Length: 112
Image (cartoon, rainbow, N blue to C red; front, top):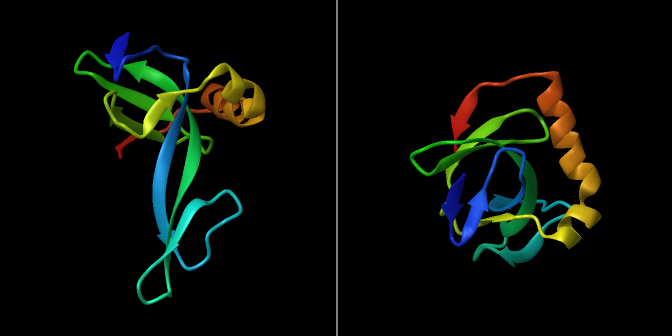
């Protein structure tokens, strides 16, 4: 168990990662959409629904994505938080899709 920003993470925890992206066509889940000065691109945020796979002694955690990728993040990352009970209820199918992927296959680890 690793404690980050007042949160304790354990393997199997459902977490939400708030990711900033840039593109010319933000998707339907995009929030906080802001156009670039030239107007050709947009900066926006989306939520990623991941599951904690491993908690490391150095304070980092390994997260699994819906597509089976694994990312290593520091537990103190400000854009990472545990899912609340409401998040767990509302986005249950997204988290369950990640857990199903975890059961089916193991993927290499990448750093975010």
